[in-house]
Length: 292
Image 1 (cartoon, rainbow, N blue to C red):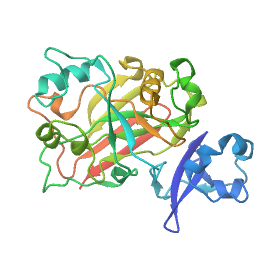
Image 2 (image 1 turned 120 degrees about the vertical axis):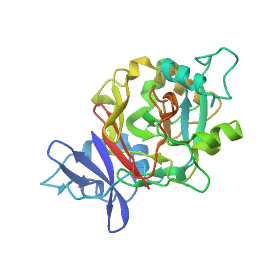
Image 3 (image 1 turned 90 degrees about the vertical axis):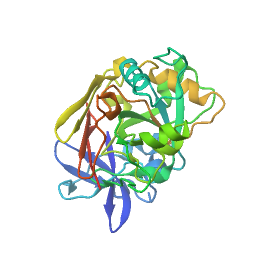
Image 4 (image 1 turned 135 degrees about the horizontal axis):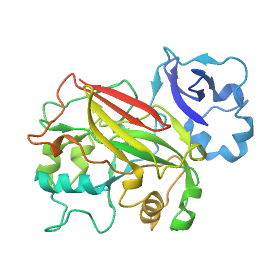
């Protein structure tokens, strides 16, 4: 199944989507009495699933304002750094990485940080450049896990049972702030630095361990990899983060970005005002945003 959040009467409305027919159906029309958002749907999915069947013609996707699927995250987004070997190498060589040990290219354990919920914007929204504090703006295409069943101390063998589905995130980064403060939160946490969407696709639709991840800037292909190249796979990430932290339905885990980010070029190719970033991940659609 594909879900989205659509703006209707200035409210984020969770909807069931058929991308082939280019139609959508508000969940409240399929499930009488439902008045929540997509996180509420995820939490109650086991009881609601059988009612989530498209009825009638639905409404056209064309012209609809599609928001971030988890338009109002309950808490920060978990993010993983340096999770593709070639990206870890390019980051190490860039001079911006203060987290690596001497001579290290790939981390020995997952590197985890967070982006606040205030960083989330939707497809087509403008990425604020924060030009007063940022001079080196970068992009990062990432497959993102959406947790369905919460838990703590989740074992790798059971981890995929806790996944509801997946979406796309652009982990927008201020490289200069990341380098200046010698940690990752401030450089990745600014308002508007987490474009997300367009859809939340349930985990039974595809194999997330084998997905092509691509990113273009102004039509130039910059990132082109497959999730099979992840250093730490999805079960490992869930086991690592849940060891002592209770994961909750609707939590998001961005799995890391492949090589080809702006700092990986010589000279670096940082984003500028007017640049358009287009991210495509198999089965998940296209996330496109322009820098303001």
